Amino acid sequence: MRIHLLLTGNEIMSGDTVDTNSAYMAQQLALQGWEVEKKVTVADHLDQLVAEIQGCCNEADVLIINGGLGPTVDDLTAQAMAAACNQTLVYHDQALTHIDQWCKQRGFEPNEANLKQALLPEQAQIIPNRRGSAVGIQMQLNNCWMMATPGVPSEMRQMMDDSLIPFLCSQFESDRVEVRRLAVFGLGESGIQQAIREQIPDWPAEIDLGFRASMPLLEVKLTAKGDACAELDHWQQKVSALLGDSLIGRAPITMAEQCLRVAKQQNMKLASAESCTGGRIAAQLTAIPGSSESFLGAIVSYHNDIKSGLLGVSESLLENEGAVSEACALMMLKGLFQQTGADAGVAVTGIAGPGGGSPDKPVGTVWIAWGTSDDHQAASFRLPFDRNMFQEYCSALALDLLRRQLAGLDRMPRFLKRWSERQNQSKTAAAG
Image (cartoon, rainbow, N blue to C red):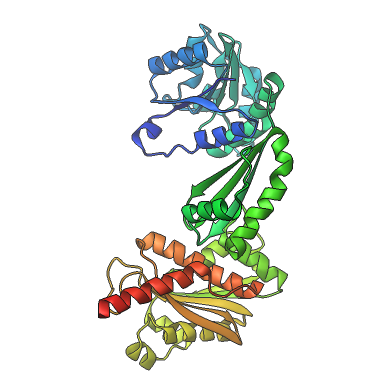
């Protein structure tokens, strides 16, 4: 099956909106064993849209159009599809009913702009939209199935799952494809690839191994098709054993999710004291539904007055050791336990940059203290990232250290030991 994607919108062409919709579409199609052959992005220009639609329908079996179904004058997809098929635009009763119900649920009557979304090619079939006001459109041109979805990601995804994929499966042959995604922290793709090559030399050709680099987690992907799917469990177990305690879990997952899972299993209440992360650890934890079962709260002690006033860090300690120090991180953690009554927690203090560093404490330096109220420790790290990524990685690192202690794992990850060794070697070389 030859599949083309057509994305439309001035905001995509200008870069104001980043196209993530086509990635989702391609991923969902790939799960059925289908590959996207061509992807085109066009501005809100009627003649260009008509030409692309006609061109794609001369080449492809399926054309999925995304965007341009909204209520404004620059939403031209319905008009372009009608022109490409030499049809007139008419009001569709099913679309009118949908728009009327959608508006009344929100307490207003549909206006002319709303009703524009029901003005569709006369022979169009309606694709239901459970989330938004604009219905989708399905038509045929030159034996090519055209399906148009709104540009709103949540609406497009719902339509893909509810309508497009099931319809395509009814019309075209599909090979079963199964994908296992493993989220890893602290290991790079080249290192994992080398380890698999050395330790699993009999890796089967029928199972594809891939990587998706992102921060702070790396995704290891195992893909099998057809009969090879039956072997996925076996090879996933081998990879999981090789990854060891750097494996966070099956993706999609976040470090905060896994940390909360472990805390819940251990019946532990968590809290955080944050300086350089500015509350990002707490934000990641509270973004997870049900996090209140295990997470009590946070103290964002960005200014030294808050460190001393709420967490009990003495002014003399701040003056002599500095806010970015082992002593300060440990006192922040101690004060956190006293203030919240948490069973376990983490405290972070560092220099996010771009300014504020010194020869002894360069930008990127962070001290993290973590553990339980009667068993905690601290360690310093140098994270060579810009401010935003520093905060993101620091938050993940702090949660990983806490996860490890709660789960009874090696408290210091292998990659951090290597970091410390390299940093010590650099210091020795500089001193020499």
